[in-house]
Image 1 (cartoon, helix red, strand yellow):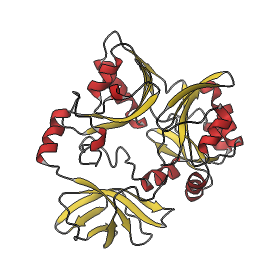
Image 2 (cartoon, rainbow, N blue to C red):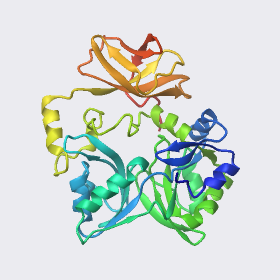
Image 3 (cartoon, rainbow, N blue to C red):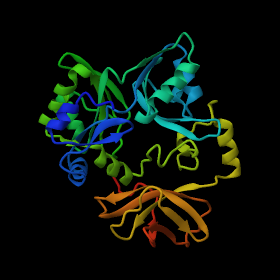
Image 4 (cartoon, one colour):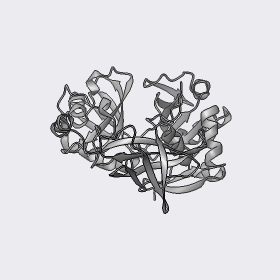
Length: 350
């Protein structure tokens, strides 16, 4: 099983590990609740080296991205990032992706860790000889530095603050470093790539700047409080962006794989829609638990305890339309429990 270049550092810090997207990654150090609170109140550093990343360059790179992804990367200026998706011919989500546009025809594509090989193979299969695709996961480490104090910490370590969805390149200990003002927690900060040779020293510099090491357990509770979807649970090849409440990710003014299917769904209606809900107590409705409203039935896709709200929260799918006065319930063990519908995010962040 692949391990992060920082694996021994995580062991030294007392991390517990879990199989995540086929990688042996730290799920927690001190504990999920403590790490969650550290990110919400100050700043944490996550090792997210399991995430995919590959370089795409060449005069046909923009056309290739526009063809294979549903958002229009051509509308993004160099030096900025974009959230987008790779769809199948039925409009289902094969992956949700961040694209970093460094120059007119120089990009980084950042898919989910579980989908790195699939997404990169898709690009290779459609690229021509004028495009260059280079895997970066084998040669780099990737951090997420997140929290209210994260921008100042990044400036302390790297000499510059990140700006939301903007990119910059710099150096650390004579190594190149690439920074994007992106993240998965709802907090300010950035995601930072560096060569493997710089991994231990750069990670140590963030710890010395006062950041708390945080594992993927707290990353999951943080993202769920913001209503951010998780591919493989809330998003999958059988779910479209329209069903997931992510129509804003679709740019209708360019041609892309899956567009015709999405147009039919847009015009004819969706068979299911994502809803958010809050439990009335600390119970947790996990992935796969039954969900119902009146005569309609569905399923929970993500559920966890919200450390901020001190109760369970979740996402799931039900067939529309859902009347506002109909009670929504979730089955936890043998009991149907009423929940309060709540459009994400579940908490407000500035």
